[in-house]
Length: 85
Image (cartoon, rainbow, N blue to C red):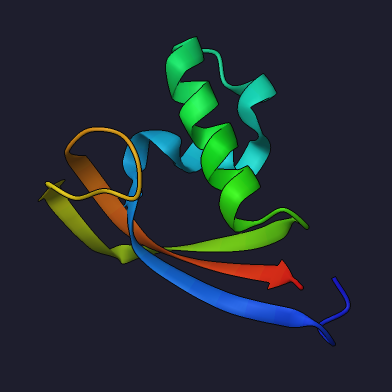
């Protein structure tokens, strides 16, 4: 990403179980169900159609978030996404 058209988006409710797939892709994920992979793919398509890079704030999390960005209640982290517009 060249940075000229980049946009920073911060989500403070990204499910812990989805972090690996968001970073490396759902094809690399061996332990998620097809349903969970679909949820992640939909989240990416709706929010980052032109791609992204991400950074997880490992110190900023909620042990039990009843309103995660997607999926059921779970542990969530604050994640910064840099996108191309």
